[in-house]
Image (tube, rainbow, N blue to C red; front, side):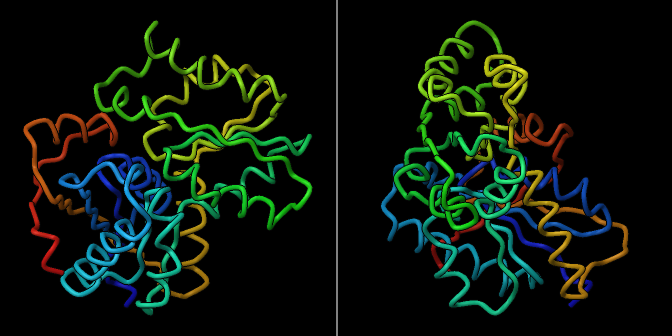
Length: 267
């Protein structure tokens, strides 16, 4: 089992920030990434649909690619599908919400935590539940930021338009005197510099991708299935657009040479 790959999936490109963090944290591991590009976005889908999609992808990664553990690198899928995935499959399964919540608790000094994410993640209340489970007295303020994903995918990580949109989203959170901001969507780490500048130096930014990679490392060590090897990666999608490789390079910071398309609905 030690030599089997790690599976990672997301609704599209955003989970590549998690894959990048895992590659940095665990360079010896082989990663299998699946982006559900044909059915993105998940943030506006119903919970039942998100659960069905997540189970299909997990079956593909577990049965076809023989992964040893699964990282749900999508906040919306982590919010709605994690329990169903853990009930159906026996391998270790990690989401991105629990590591982000723990990091937020470790970072905050005044117990006022802001979380930005997709509409689906915000509506699920998963971050509020996860943070309050760890610290019941914490005040958690959520804000949906639907324009961030298209801005990131178009490469508009800074500039007047992006800053104007970001400031509009951050204003109500800053007004509540948060001291910690959780990036509750895997696209958002690419906006970290802009968000940090607008939020100010007193606000700590929690990147769930980095925290998930650390949590995965601890989990593999605890299970005794961490690998010391050469590493590597494979990439699958449910729809391959002309722009995918270009956009993926932006998320990973390096080119992707091969991407395979999979008809995921048969799983």
